[in-house]
Length: 324
Image 1 (cartoon, rainbow, N blue to C red):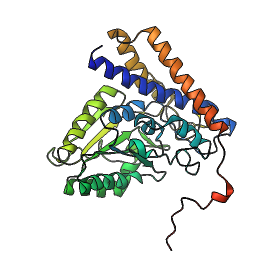
Image 2: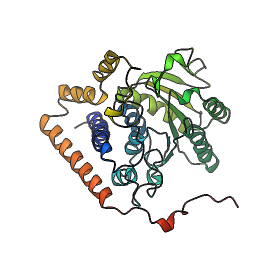
Image 3: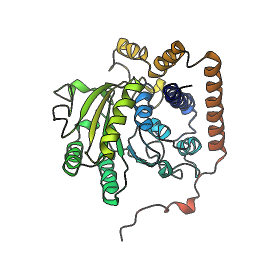
Image 4: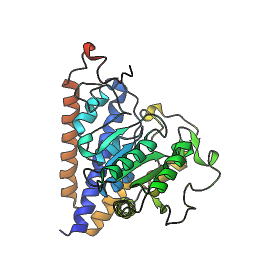
């Protein structure tokens, strides 16, 4: 199998894994064993996988509240993720952070923030840290169109351009901030695409085409490593479920039904699956084996989480910042 086919299979496997994990979380959520709000990324898998595939293991990621896909695509431990959702001591944040505060420093995923736009200056800071240490590392920061309304984005991008920091700004434009459509919040059709490419290379890409995302992220990472500064990638995509929780908790009426159905037909996982089938890279037997492997790992992760202990009450004050 050639390298191109191997890459495509890897991208597909990563997207399928994220999709199946999200579906399992959604199906288990109302059992009330995961006592943390969840923001699922079903429909947006191609962005996380395409960008993270262009990064090295030590490169940095700064994520947001809808961050399960970023965490898994960067190589975050699945058992630790599911345990964190169950608020267990074996979770990636020791059961104290929940769904919106995921971290796996061993693979460069240095945290996600529940504050809208909160991870953006952190991503810029990680780029600054790499520059000051003389390390050839890249910082990728993921944020949504709601965070694009925040002033901290403009401050961070400006600082990154000024200092030529190795940062990739990844806007996951899924069209909505909670229930507010992007056109009701932004006067223009795009955010940073008016600047010259010498100052901030930017592009709008199909966020449901993982190969298009990967190619653009690969170019941005190469630019960053060469010391040429930041890049901006707007990925047009869609979250199939509502803002938070599971399908039965979705708010009704703010999205036309035909809009949701139209985007579901553009499923990034199904699109790459069909392409690989047509190219003869993926077979039904191979797909079945991959599905079985993924589902077995998910079963094991949920069993691990449910068998893990809760944090001890005596440790309530651990890991807190004390300013005295």
